[in-house]
Image (cartoon, rainbow, N blue to C red; front, side):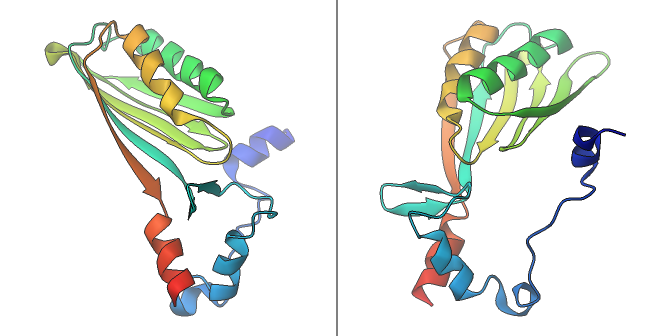
Length: 168
């Protein structure tokens, strides 16, 4: 088995967990090290905030092609490319009589979807950390599913946890 396959299975990966993590959450010393601007990790530092990643909840409405596995997989690949992410694996499932669910596992986190093509609706999640640019996925979805009717909500994952630990 290749190293890449072992990586995908999680074999040989260190978790980074520490004994003290189980006592009271992440120790303050670790959290404080996250705000160090020179630290090389995948936490995002923007507008004075430190957070694990940007999670977009994207509602695609009046879309076409939301019942096509190939179109969805192609959209996943295009989103990965334009957002500057790293694709590890794609898995989709076609339902009968209609609908597709799927996930693209990324080194930076994931993209997921569940569709209701009978009403032109697709529920997408785009969660990315590091230098990836998840907002670029929105235009890919508009183009892929031929609609301008898209709503997006942004969550800064881990922001509240980091802020509480810094204040403690």
